Image (cartoon, rainbow, N blue to C red; front, side):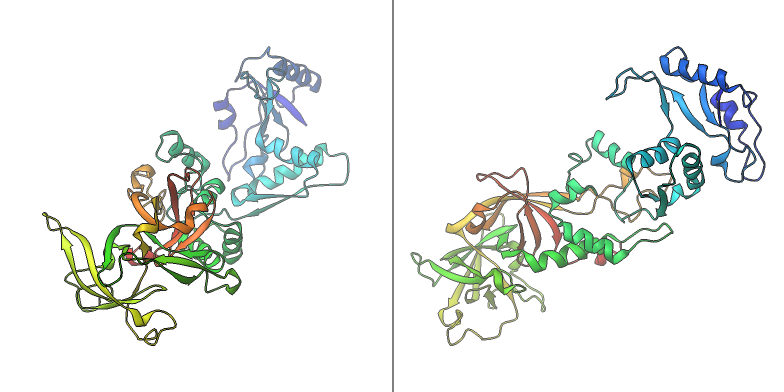
Length: 440
């Protein structure tokens, strides 16, 4: 059923034939089995140099399946094994070891990607030759999971790691389980994504937006909504007492009443997002602009009265007046205004570093253009680090892996680099899919 072949790799390849023409038998094909066994022992003892001999299965050189044309099943390798050292010098090829390992380990179904479909007859043939019971593992093929804007090949991902184009296998931009965990993806969201796309018998590529939707949908139901200001500018409520601090009740998650509420401190000076103020705003701008009103989330309605600029014309402070009758429970609380913005009390805020992660590549399929190095297609904005961000003091007790929604911004998780003295948040996913508007 097998023989030692002393031909070169090139000679063996040339004898394989083509899918439409049969192969040519090796001159060593009918070597006596005693001689083959003796040579195999020499291969394994180290007496035979690498590349000098191989053990081939004797099947059918005229088979329409090229993998059945006397495949190589053992070759010589003199590199020490990480477990067995130099005890063995002859090592099996994957096609041979695959079915035998499954058989010895009691595997019932070996799940493989579609490229292994043509290997299945060989998988079954090896089992039939060597199995001593009626039990047979079954090889079943299905499509590989491919995603847009990334690469799933371990070889390609290894290039990114080795060339330090990412921080490691757990870089939150990597499509690895450790990367997804560090980014804040939940196990349930990944399961929901897989359930939504199913599996098929043909290769395809799945839109990254579907995975992000599953992550967003799961986090929306289960995480606390907090106030975090990524690009802060100071808002001064000029008619609010400077020595007064109020506690505003805010709901932790309107999707889940059992998560309750918490207190959020409100004071004379607040941090707001820089892009929530515009001095000369267009008609449909519903945030802060001189003369306009907005609601501060969970607090009062305020009216913008102006701003302060530095010598270079940059806005450094925004001024507004509050209406004390618009707090929840007050007579004017339900007065309608078009805009609502989030905020953090200056005196009760924490400094934080925020890492804004985005898609790793600029194009849907980085490997599609064979004339380009896929690494040249990496998204230069796949990681933007923001320092000096402001978050509410409620997050002081947060631990690595804890997940939150920064209201109006997106979902974030505490990174493993985070410390009580230096909070670090990773953006898991934006609140909405911004890539739909980029045309790709």
